[in-house]
Image (cartoon, rainbow, N blue to C red; front, top):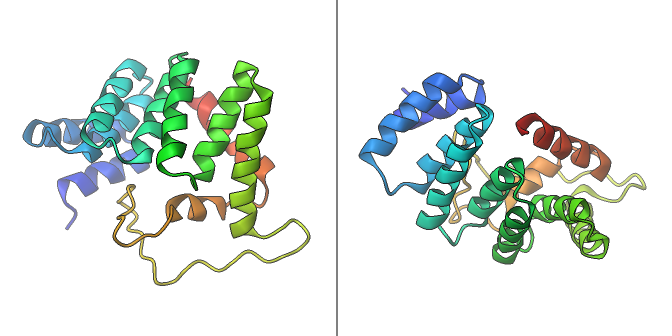
Length: 197
């Protein structure tokens, strides 16, 4: 049987935002120190186009778990959706400072720097994202993609990787295996950004 949190995450994944929000509200009432709950609820709010409430929850998640890069990347996403380009860039910079191998954060930071008109820095972050992606995806000259590591068990309802079980940032590595090129990855990221604006 699923726990309340697992049930709420399932609702979120399936696009049933109202029931997910109701459960996350209940859970937060009884556990106001759980950064994951605020992060999940922030994601629900973003999907419901309630951007300010999303930002408030991501602020709280950062406050509770300031050493985890994903907290800053999530908040950066919300800040960009609200038009705070400088704040979003600062948060992505903090995310890559905390996890220098996070290709997604590097790519997203590059996209925002490009939007800001800072092409030299944007290109640096795109190159870093490309370098990490090519390391795990192989080159475009026909090398095969590596097989997923079978000893890693990412539970489908747990969005935050367990740092005791994962080395590096395997979540982004697995995400990158979905795409065969950076162009596809950029199209996906752009789609997500447009959907939330």
